[in-house]
Length: 394
View (cartoon, helix red, strand yellow):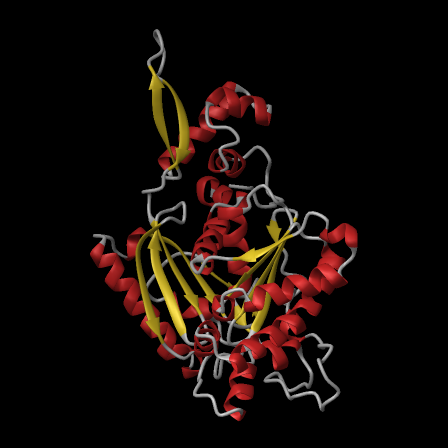
């Protein structure tokens, strides 16, 4: 697992754990070589990490008189993480081990516009069910990660002016869980979580990745230099609310954000529902649009292809500006077979700079990317150098 950037001590327990967790160094000798620390200092750091439950030693062979020779690894069973990926119309929750691997999952349909208390109450109920199923309790929870479909001030864990999340503006999600769990809570935009999950699970060797979510809305997340790029306040990557170059000269449609002519106002699932209803189609969601297109409906296919071209123009600009090696496209509209992806690819390869597209891959992301990435997000926060140093050294 690639390491996250952390300005904490390069010789403390957190730095040792970082190397073990990434599998860059897993034995005493390797850790000494990588850190330049003495044998006794490395031994002290490892002993502290073992006592705190962060790592465990796995003997590999018996030595001829000293302690067993062995390797160290993350103590995956030393606690659990609670993870929730909230979408516009459904939510996924999971209890994972400390390596963010799911041990139990749940899925439910629920409109995020119902407000924070009902939605997070449902999430909390699912967390309790899964913990009980696994024989765990609140004391075993080391961290909670929540992904939401709206802008997030990441440092504060606060939702800010979300277009579709009625009642969530300014809501501090972490405070909801504070009475029941004495652990860190990290909250981020859902597409940032998707970008992190896609990078860690499918493209760990590619340092620059652009994630596109084409669903009810249009969002994007960035991995630059191997880390999620959130910007100064956490709003980087809001591609859906950049101005679109419309396919015709008609009056630009109003977007849910209050502006006119945004990419999302042409290419978002809600916009396609609007346009197809005007044609008499019985659709109510981005999933309905994708299903109609897969079923061969010509109007739905035409609408998805048009959305792909509008989205492709925005992606082309991002590719020319950021030069990622991978563009991953997920979300309900990406289920419309190749109707969306083919249009995005066509426009990007036509409009982005030749050098930026020379080795560029544009492909479909799996549906579980968001939940996986949300787990990776809270694990990164929990196991950052500074967090570990504080926990171990006080």
